[in-house]
Image (tube, rainbow, N blue to C red; front, side, top):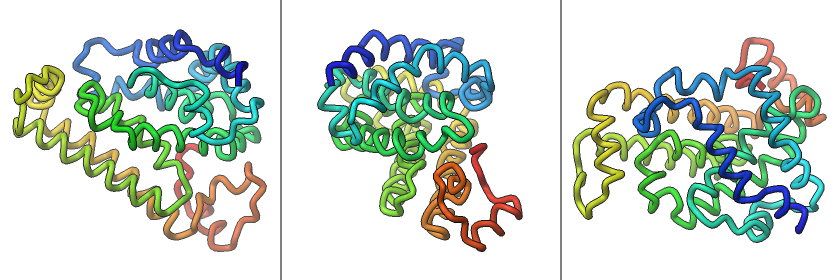
Amino acid sequence: MASVKEAVTPALLAELRAFWFGHFESQDAYALPAQKDLMPWFMGGKALDDICVERYAPALEAIRTSGITSGKDLVEALAPATPMDWLSLVLLLDQVPRNCYRGASSKLVYSVFDPIALGVATAAIDRGIVDRTPEVRWFCARRMWFYLPLMHSEDMATHERAMAAYQSMVDDVEALIEGEGVGEGGCGHKAQAAKVLQRDPEGARGMVKLNLGLEKKHYDIVRQFGRYPHRNKPLGREMTAEEQKYLDEGGETFTS
């Protein structure tokens, strides 16, 4: 466990967070990221992969070889001190591996890091990191990352929870647009986010509904197959005829 603490330091988590959001041109993007703000994360290509491998693969390898297999154990080992450290830890476990382990090595994403990421994200949600931290709850560009480990799960009960989580984000955005409770309790973060969303209400609604719709796609696949067919090859799982037909006919792979 000492090696994990030495590799995954508060400084590393802060640096990852600064890098991940470093392309934002204003604070408004945290409340309502535009398409150009999303592109570096999901369409970063080899350039993003190379940065992630160089900067963060050593930390991931320290986790992988530590014997830690659950989010609970990792949380106990690292004891993230702030909501922003929790956010960085979720990014490190859920997003960065998808840039570090491609092709055949993607099995490590699904078999090693996804279960740990889910445990950490669930712990964060259960502890109120999302709902009771204004800098997270009212700013979708931070909040969304806590829900992606749930989306990546192949467990149906987890997807039920994910659907509820994404719906709660839709509801919160609608409340901000309508100005419900804005200014109550002196929450400047909520008022700041509301101001941004009220300038582009349709854009805000569209963003969170897109997230909910993406979760629904994942939900439907797991409900149909009990797993994600596109993961079968890297995980060495036998493909069923139904799964093969689904993929052959253009079924979702979510860029694998």
